[in-house]
Amino acid sequence: MNFNPNSSFLFVLAALVILFVIAQSVFFLVRGLRRAKEIGMDMKQIRKIIVSTAVFTIAPAVSILLGVVTLSKFLGLPLPWVRLSVVGAITYELPAATSTATVFGLSLAETITDPKVFSAIAWVMTLGIMPSIILVPLLIRKIQKGLVSMKNKDSRWSDIFSTALFLGMISAFLGMVFSDIRNGLAGWIPIFVLLFSSLLMGICGLCVKKFRMKWLENYALPVSMLGAMAFACVITPWII
Image (tube, rainbow, N blue to C red; front, top):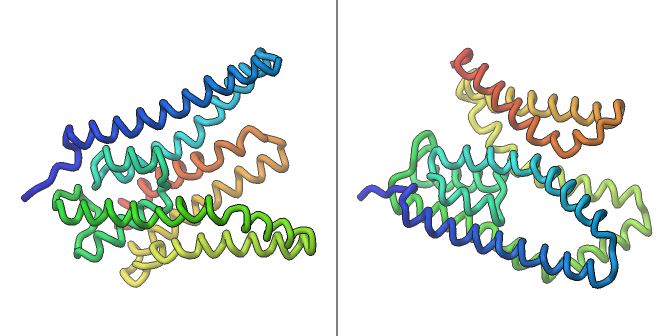
């Protein structure tokens, strides 16, 4: 029995979820504008803030769009659309989908049409992200108090601790990058792409610090992603 991950039913479900999220955003925007008028805030300044904020959301939106396009090749469009529009991130969704497909002895080189595999991937994505949704509201105050207390005692150690946590999180995803290095030069393609993406991110950071290009801060991620994707398209046929 084949399964169509781009079925009209899934598109309808995804659209309903997205519309609900958009409705929430519009609701709080309207409530915020009304409250701003009530307390006498400068509406011209408020409109300026809204416009500037909307412009700067373009860069993160590009990153999300790239993630949707990447996942849609093998999961169809509805599921990645919902995941990355609400709670997901490409750094989590892709490893979750890949590891689940590997358990079933499949690769993500083509569209998943087995309903069992598709369902398993959807469940792994959903259950894997649930702890962060549930635990953050319950523990965020304690975590923040602990970080503030640590920073007050020793700011240098606090910075080292935060950096270590971030690097630990990144290291968890590096296993996928180095997983195929025993397969010859082709297995090194992800590493080459990673290094090139890091180089682009470093150049963007240098431009921000040395040349005061503050606007580039919001576009460094999509620039690195797009550049790395273009680089992968160039070196993959050359190596393979």
